[in-house]
Length: 106
Image (cartoon, rainbow, N blue to C red; front, side):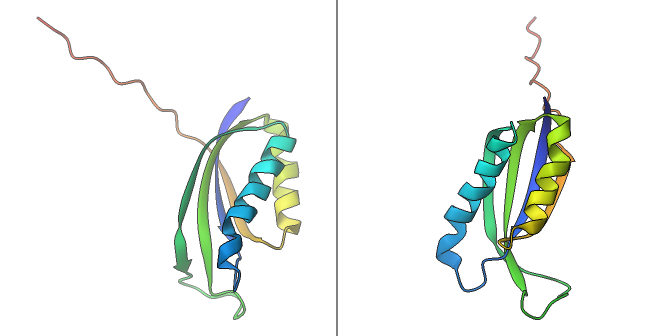
């Protein structure tokens, strides 16, 4: 199992109340692929700097840190590409968090 960080941009145009359900669906997909979600950081709705499609001008950003087998990332990426609620997704290896070092006492 490897730790990943997924940045999701959710397309919830006109359905702002459905963001929680969309996040739950994303978490369910990750869990079904054998992953274990550690943290979910829901960010605000942001306007896009470059609008590619006039129908989609903004999105809700969600950052999810999870553990998953390396073989599960490609199928997850394919599933999210077919999901109309997920506008964009980007998976990266999560940075390693080093344990804080206790100060030396004299």
